[in-house]
Image 1 (cartoon, helix red, strand yellow):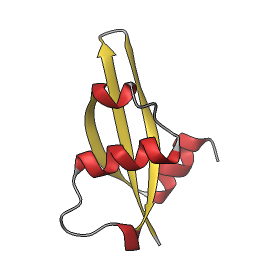
Image 2 (cartoon, rainbow, N blue to C red):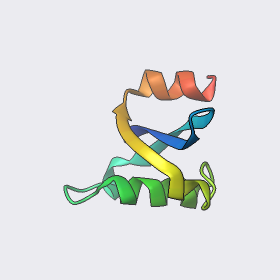
Image 3 (tube, rainbow, N blue to C red):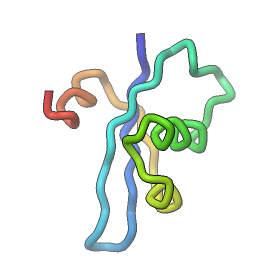
Image 4 (cartoon, helix red, strand yellow):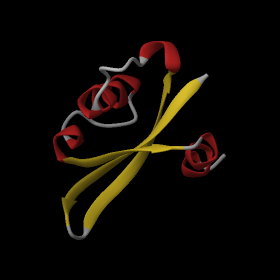
Length: 72
């Protein structure tokens, strides 16, 4: 079982994007916060370390939304 997140990067009004992140439930506890999710995105290689400095939001999404974002 996994939890799914939409990590949104905002460089400026014309340059922003979202990346889907899946984290296995066993790796997520009550103290897990946005910074932890961003770090997991970098570790998984779905987010560049430089872009991680420009994340403006992290939202919970469903598995279906995650799949849609991945183009599955």
